[in-house]
Length: 543
Image (cartoon, rainbow, N blue to C red; front, top):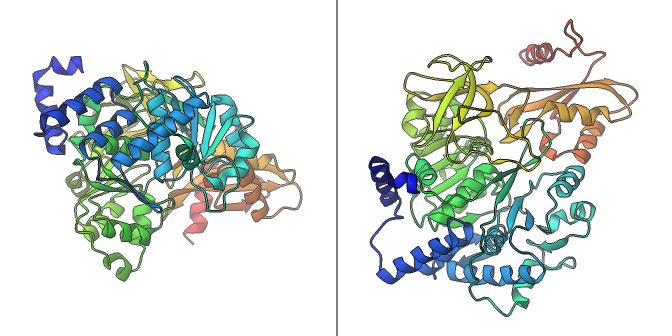
């Protein structure tokens, strides 16, 4: 913030953007003072955002989910009580609390309550299989876990003797104490003192190997990163925003934090359904939609009557990320629903790298757009030389939100203050980025990172598998999908192998197709020739 204030032109740009969002506006002096004091005490944290929103908009809707509506004032008191109950259970500054929840009020309220204690929030992927969940839990070692009742069986295996609380539960719930029970049993819902240190947010990422790793990032205390996004995606204060993307993902959680700052009304559903999404947007006059490309595809696959039978005239920002957005899909969306589509390219490690506005997507279909203010892009060749526009190489990003490091102690490659995304691409002469694929074997299927090597290892652990190779192939719905080629060493079916993988890895890592072969093609040095496997698949697919 100090560095920003030393540069008048950047202050002017920041002021302009913040006025356009409504964050800077005329306000009653007492309300302005209360908000400023809240930010000063709590810094730029989820706790601060809710404290400020409760002061400014106490009776307005904060969260609308399948259980109904909660106002900012109600949620502020509930999170005070929840934080105090957690504190009485031994959770304090610097402790870790894991969340394994779908999109609903308790994801938000748990995150805010943890922030009020100065504890660290660890976000679990709801698709984790038992072995992955156990491995991550043991490595990250949270003091407590908050989870939806549907994951109770997984928790029995992975949580050990850690404190456990249930978030979303059914009426006949008989297991661990629920968050609602903690709140109801807590007599004191008064404001807490701000902690000495703000907690961290730890998102889980595949890193460079596929094994889920904790990616640690401090909670931002500068305005510049916020200005970067708001300058390209024109979100505004107090907008009803429908969150289709999972909140535990880097993309969903980035938008979650922006929504907290903007005092947005969070419109949530636990599971994505294309028709229900359109219904909710119409019902709540949502002006913003947070989504991933595969969800856009599924909405466009609805029949014409279902697509056009809903009034989406209020929807002015459709913010997409978490996977490749091809030119055909973006044009189909805008032709159908108007030029309201914004595409962000980034990752857990670099936050954001480039943001395309509707004009970019019209003028250069397939582009990820230019870098926003405060972000720089560099394209390097294999020898570390920076490449000019038009030449392809590995994409490196520089901004204020780069990963601090994995909780395992590893880190991504950094050159000249820029971190690798692991993707290949090029810049055009307008400075717009085009992403061409991965520098390694990782594929992105439906917004989820999948590394073939870990799937191959899981397959080869089956007693009836001699060898296995997995490759990414094109998929109309998910962009890419995983296909496995297996050499059998006994009798086993495709469904049996899929079930075997699902028992050991997240369900999105299960190959959608398994082909049995007599042998795997190999290069002269003995390595499996995966390019030949892809070509053979494409040849058969084109027949």
